[in-house]
Image (cartoon, rainbow, N blue to C red; front, side, top):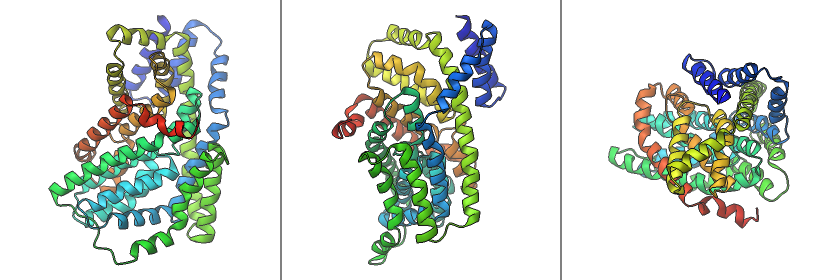
Length: 426
């Protein structure tokens, strides 16, 4: 029991004094090996193997693709199409923001990237139409989280690598949950907007939507090319990520002619920073996870849960509550890397499919993007709308509650997650 005490004691101590999550993970894992007098070279080798894999190559490519799409004019065209589709209905611009997040999420795979791309265009437009700044930012931050559920999804790639599960199968399993989450947000937005008197964009002119779709056809085709290639077996998710980069470059340079050298440099800079951040978290979280497994922490947690109850629905409630709580304080990738080796064996022993658990885990992390104190999307929405985190947090509560309800449905009815992969024969 000494190793777990040192591991968790050091981990929570470092978090409490404000150490970065990477330092907390790495230092606590290293402390266990130093305390035992072991050679920690094998620990470093294990951590290195976690990031030295073919599927991980998809991460920088998807991040770069999402960054390039803003400079290439693709995200702007997708948002414009979404705005015209919503029209003048109650909450129409909010509906547009959710639709745009779905479109952009099907390309970028990143919650913060989706929030930034959609928020820069939709928040000012919503404010101009009479929406409050805090509501506009809260809705955009909440819908931006769809980028990590609707495939391709960077957190699903991380889970697939950590759990040794098919990333293609995870992508397929995430489609319906992503649509359900978006549908829940749309219902909440309509209900609130009806009460507040928020409306949509002015009545569109005849043929305006057709014209926008024609001008944005290359933007619409991006997720079709990326996801169609994966599901048809034409290329793997990693190869699809590279294809998406070259597709974006082609469209931005030769079709839209909006991708300039400065935009390309900025995209490379943000990609380098984000990729380095992801990989170092994976490196330290893998070392942390190995110690958990070596000391049979998953087994002890499983025994503790089964001592409390043998009801799978009740265990799901406990697990979801735990994941949402953790997501309030830990980054999504760190959460997945730490939680997967701990909870996955527990859930599998109870008969839960690993793909089903992975989708529920990612959906819980999606909620974490819009829950303080860490919520990354909240900070992005706050900076764009120029309102405080406290104001946004209050307005985001209805959306968070709706998302929790959807996650509960996904947990209790596994066919909602697994029927599409089964349909495709995975």
